[in-house]
Length: 215
Image 1 (cartoon, helix red, strand yellow):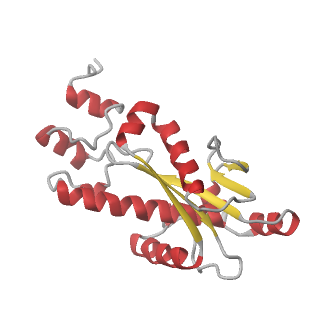
Image 2 (spheres, helix red, strand yellow):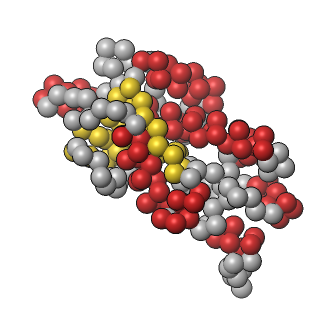
Image 3 (tube, rainbow, N blue to C red):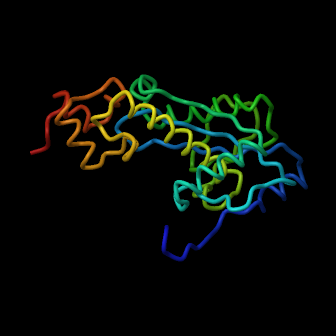
């Protein structure tokens, strides 16, 4: 967290060992946007070039927005990157976890190469990825490839939400990025639900009268 002492910092040690023992390429995978009430969930897969890794890569959550954007540009310029996007219809049909895992698999496919190993943030791995996958809890804070993926996924999704804000200027998407802030809840109460709100999420169901408020 900003302003606090962190117990760990993302490193390239795991990738370096795997590359030395088993070879590569090795892809890190992470997603952004599981929690918001609106917008897609976006995943990124990143294969870093061990000889050309941008300085400063870390878990996207501990980086300021301008630093994230700068690092994203550097990662895109020096690494192989794939993106997967699960839209609201898929989120509502499959649930947010399955949609996020689907987006992760899409991001790996979008690399247009077959990794030797895929390192995934969290405790679950996407199915239908035709190579070894390994889940790493808090991987975005431990593993440099996953941290790079977290940056690309976050910046990509934030950019999409900025575009959405231009179409729906009354909701403040450019500020809260679809998360359930007080501002966002007030905008839903005032202006209603857009096609980009997740109807499988309870606050949206309550706004639509599809669920009863708790007594």
